[in-house]
Length: 280
Image (tube, rainbow, N blue to C red; front, top):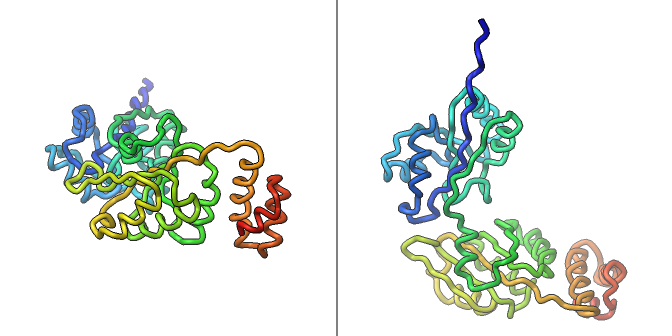
């Protein structure tokens, strides 16, 4: 007599609070209490949240350093009938957090993947920034090294959609300085700091004014940050070519002499060479 294989479980991707522990939804609580185990980025951090809501489900570590090894093992459990939940330290898993390998592997194995939506710092910040939100680009964390960060910002300088970045407290000043240099002092922006927490603040203004406020107030250099930056104004004709030419020039400047970089940027974009050379 043949025995039917066990019905596969479900991988639940569960959003958790970004600060205020009361922001965990009733549905998220129900899932976390009923799954076989919870895969957490930091099990000690997760236990603070779970204990607050009387969730006794066992946890297991799933993070950047063990994701490749753990994903196949978790998929094997899912295929065997266990339902599992995936959470990150805060917010929605996979958004600047580990998890995509597990989700991809679950799909490949025919395992059901379902979401329990909730908090996401990027969306929360966008909703209160006072900047256009119908079209936006999420960039996550910029490169930590100054050269790579400035090169990435040069690539984004002409982006017309609103931009959303995450940043750490020890780089917030440097990143604001690079944004002023790369995007211009008058570009509108907002800083959302410590969202949903006791010391939450939202500052809005130009990039230059935000940098000045952060430099003047040490408290504004503490915590976790989301930067929301207005997109570049859409220009036509020669002005548009000049903006693109300057973007390309910034990318070439680190590899070539100024004159050679300007000549190539002009050839690529059609911008006036002299104007680009002056800008360089």
